[in-house]
Image (cartoon, rainbow, N blue to C red):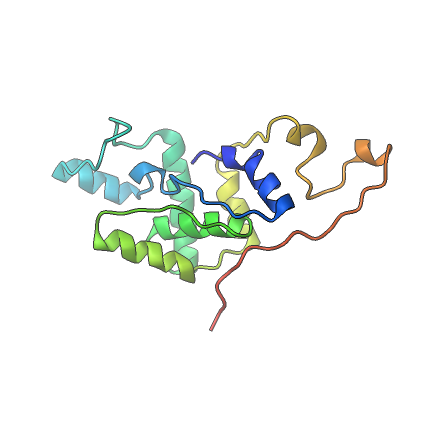
Amino acid sequence: MSRDFERDIIPMARTHGLALAPWNVLAGGHLRSDAEEARRAETGEKGRMILDTNWMRNEDEKKVCAALEKVAKEVGTEHITAVAIAYVMQKTPYVFPIIGGRKVEHLMANIEALKISLSGEQMKYIESVLPFDPGFPSAFIGDGTTTIDLLGSAAYQDSWPLKQAIRPGID
C-alpha cells in the first residue's frame, strides 16, 4: 500500500534500464476483501502476525482493497491479490516481485496475476484511491515522463517514449 518505491527507485530504474524486485507486494497479508476479513473474525484465523500484531486492516488498506476488488471484477478474477501483483508488474518494465504464500490458494492467485492485463484507466483508478506525494525533487521537476515549463525556459528538453511494461497478450 506504500508507494514510496515510486519516488526515486522507479524513475532511476526506468532511466537506467534496471530491473526491480519489490517485496511486501501483498502488504503482509492485509490485501483481502471485507468478506474474507469477516470470515477470519468469525473463525479466529487471524493470519500470520510476525511483523505486525494487528491482523485487521486499517482504513487506507480497506480503501485499496475495495479498489482492487472493483478492478478484479472488471478483469474477471476473484483474487484481489492477483490484481495487486499485476498492478506492480505493469507499473514499469522489468519488475519481478517477491511474493509468497503459505497455501495452495495463494500460489494459484499468484499465478493468475500473470494472465491479467490492466488498462491505463484501471491503473489510474488503483492509484487514485490514496493520495500520493512524489516528494522533492520529483514534485518540482517531474519524474522524466513530461516536460517541465521551468526547465524549458532554460534548456531544450527532448522527451523519449518510455519503455512499457510487459503485459499478457489476449488470446
